[in-house]
Length: 314
Ligand SMILES: CC(C)(COP(=O)(O)OP(=O)(O)OC[C@H]1O[C@@H](n2cnc3c(N)ncnc32)[C@H](O)[C@@H]1OP(=O)(O)O)[C@@H](O)C(=O)NCCC(=O)NCCS
Picture (cartoon, helix red, strand yellow):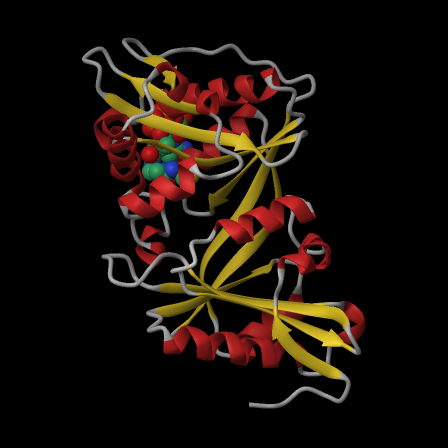
């Protein structure tokens, strides 16, 4: 491990660093994040979860941020994946700060029993790619954001025969219905490209992540119901700020695919986003997801610069 040059020191992140970190993130992220939403997102992580967030200061001013975050707690059926990230202010690049933060983050993940480490880099950031490759990361997945401009967008909702679209707001928010939504979600998610890398989310993590998220809105959580009352598809979207809605997941159970259900859910989701005054709706696609890419492009979504998801064995 290399140390830090003179004048730099590492210390734990505190919530008061949120605006500096939001600025660092917004240099590369495509969905802008405010200091407040970042603060609340960071505070949401349960204290039992394995998370290390660090700040590097240069004579007292934050100039870099690094984290090592477990996607869930140890002991479940999912692989214990740690997300490693470092953001260094351009003026302070090339001084070994990113490498130092990665070393600290990877050591933390290793101590906690990480199955593997994941980091990401935007397609146009060659320097970041070279940095990760040098540290031993290899590309495992390629994702890119797609964005639909809702101003002027208008498409009718065409329901496949025998299918109704309901929302979470139509049902009591109780354990039985939450479990039903979860079962439908993971039945579909089992076929999402990349699931072999991330694993299927366990109920408790999903429940927390979904219902305690700032973006969750009952009316934005859409459920496709067939004639027999079975829940056969879901699409969950919510606002990330007053202009933007993000779709977290869309899926249809295997027996009901190819009938136009996902398309109907996406149209209903975009209509809902428009009804709450959003200007854009955003989601991520895997290069390998033929049907989802087809639906999104057909509805008018435009691709953004993609991301390489890079993996390293600890
Ligand atoms: C992706 C998914 C949601 C699609 O659901 P669906 O209800 O079968 O989709 P629809 O029937 O509404 O539409 C599928 C469209 O993709 C097209 N399509 C199917 N396979 C395709 C492929 N390999 N390449 C391109 N287009 C394809 C179909 O022809 C259809 O288009 P059309 O209506 O113009 O003919 C479903 O396959 C799924 O749940 N997969 C696993 C979960 C997942 O990957 N979710 C997305 C990640 S967030």
